[in-house]
Length: 612
Image (tube, rainbow, N blue to C red; front, side, top):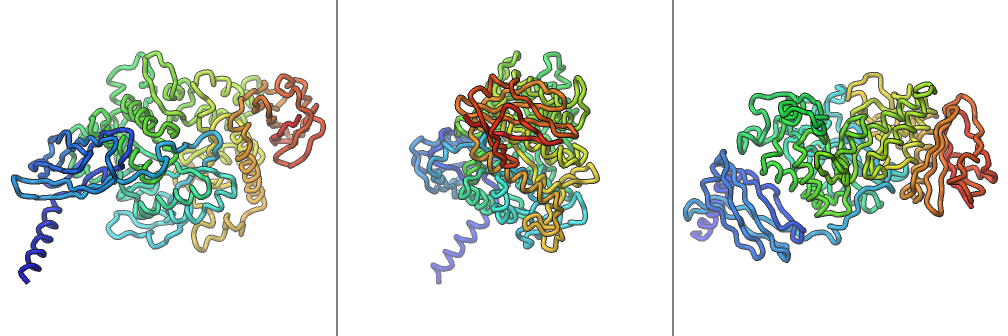
């Protein structure tokens, strides 16, 4: 009996002491990482009043940093290159009294983890807003204790889509020809309202329970791996949600910019490149809050910077990511962004990162790409950037009348600016995304123009990304985000239209599904599109021809905006077509025995594999 009472007392003492330790982040790490440094954020009541010890071969506690808030400690560990996976206690003592213990674990890395191949020009990316795609688990629609519940009738509300729904839909995505999936953020957004989009993080190490669990996120990537598909995580370094746990007990005053006197950013992103910019304007952009519900994190604070860098490495290793899409790229401190991209590629040399710099000016977008020589000496290491200039040019070029400087010439001239980029073939290209009107709407709901745009983005240089629903002509009346990010039909029980089965779909939508699937499945194996050079010819008479080619392969693409078919004599293209005698048109499947002229139907694209 005495032994039992002693044991019970020990357990209760441990539980009581453990209550002083709320968080240790990252919650675990891995043996065998290239970087040997690891910084732990520790949060607990008056935890700074403790002495910290640990004892594990190959792990050295180099320093313990106390900050303004006594409820925080930052522990700097050095891991030996040969440290073994395993568990060890981190002990927190006041004098000789043990007041808290954290069982830390170093996991074993997956085989070949450092050599994971990121998304690249061989891929087709499907962009999905998880809350609006498929409700695979209605049991997580309402989560006790979370601030916002289900309200599918409200376009800004939570509709119930989740990770389970995406897992259940992978066959559909694979059959459409997609090889990669980019999800809008899935981390916890425990905000009072309108947080379905995921861009107001309240816990950087936890999947939002209304989307699923951390384990389900890992399961998603394992299922993608089985299909040879890749996962891209949407991350946000610039800001967190106003209900993030640390906003109620911040580590230090400068953890958040302009706190507590919130200032909204001036959104003048060009201050990053402007040689004449004033410091007050630079600070007004970089240090301002994106919106009142999204506090602006101070990446110049070295502890904030290390926290974010480690968090991205943690998710990459934990889930098995093949890429990161970084939100609001020009808003965080640009020197920290440089260091982050550098460290990510040192850890994962073949990984890919794409940044959102929403500018129509290619000189601005190119500033951030790896390999760019900038006059101010700034270097970034992001392999890819979102090609907003090309997106704008294609939307305008397809819809505008053909004149000297409008129409297809806008696409041609956008591509002629590729000399500004270190590597335009690594840019991520797209007809639309979750923040803008759907491309179908941008081109006046003209199905033929939509098809031409999709054909262009799937065959020009770069890495194509298509937004969910493009394949079924999803449209919207309003222009707000809640309209654009509509529910995917068939993703909810009782939907009258089901894109997965075809039930209730219009003939035009079914035809578009086939069009996308045909082109994307062909593109999977079209290595000339993945690796070939681009040559284009000045548009004439409402037609635009370009080629993807290598020494041994060539594909010819011709866009025809005219209301009637056009027959194009190909002798003008001799420098790239020389030696080719016939071809196959991919969209129609037609064999072409004589390629001296090509007939292009009205308002359409032809994609011709040339044969010698």
